[in-house]
Amino acid sequence: MGLRDKVAGAEMAGKRGQYLGPGNHTGVIQAIKEIQTRKKEDAVVLELKVEETDSEETYAGDVYTVMWMIDRHESAAGQFKRALADIVGCDEDGIDQDFLNTLFDEKCLDGTRITVRSRNIKTESNNDFTLHNFEPAA
Image 1 (cartoon, helix red, strand yellow):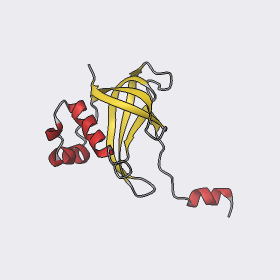
Image 2: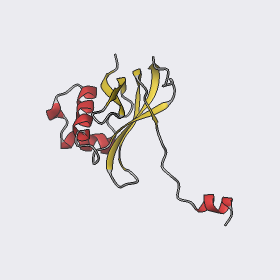
Image 3: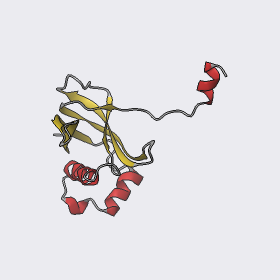
Image 4: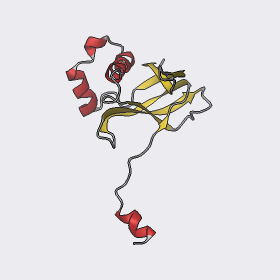
């Protein structure tokens, strides 16, 4: 089997997103999606089209992703809930099952302008991690 046959017959891999670098980014939510990773783990992806940034690693006009690995990290579900509450301006009680159904089924935040403030930190295990804080855009 030649190269062309292998490519034509292959299952297409998922798109790999670009991740937001440290800095302040303002943009429009393109999508918030529930996904399963290749390892069959539940995760959430927020896609943001950046309009303005002060980062040397992030470019205006490009789409970037922020991912919460819900099954892999115990704190991920709570971190995603905090991000949603900060974006919509509510307390944790506002992020209930009804809101999540509307979010994922009706795409209620698609098109919303937000600001993401990102910075790099070291985890307890000394790994690099980019911490994101979300807010409605001014």
